[in-house]
Image (cartoon, rainbow, N blue to C red; front, side, top):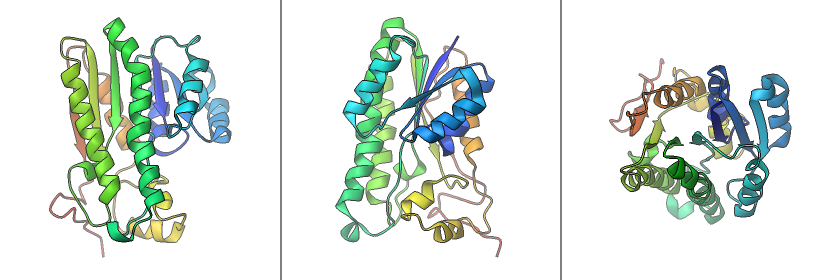
Length: 250
């Protein structure tokens, strides 16, 4: 039985990743802050889904969560560091420092805390795979991306540095870097709950979906043990890296 831990599992990429891993026979520990959503997923997905209330921005919450799961799941074969968020699209000098702090706490500090809980066991067993969900924002700058892009640049470099540290082991590390993606809470959260404004961002564009990103996670995880996929950069056909231009139908 293979065990996967997916953070941010209650919606968006995390939920899609969880569903696809379960179809492959994984037992998935789905970690998220919203207990009600986790409970609904448990009712739907059954015994292969283990709901775990955990806030990755809170070290005490992470420590407590791992104390809970350790007896039942001493070995985690696949860690998907998916939990993350963007807040605001304003220029750096107009941004709220509390938004910067929350992005750093979630996207950087939380990701490293969770990784540090899981990685020693993987090294000891000489097997395992860590998949981080980064972003093309970690490579290509854009107006309003400031701290969010910087956090994803950290994820990119952290993933590469983990690989350097893990040389000589069979532990794998992959960074998935999505581009323009719809059908998640990402833009609604970023725009402080403005649903209409968030919807307008995707108007006339065939964007990526959460299922597209989940398929990339599954593909990377299903490669032969001697193959490490360092990174996967994914954009919809409508988007290019020439100014991250979005081509609309009208």
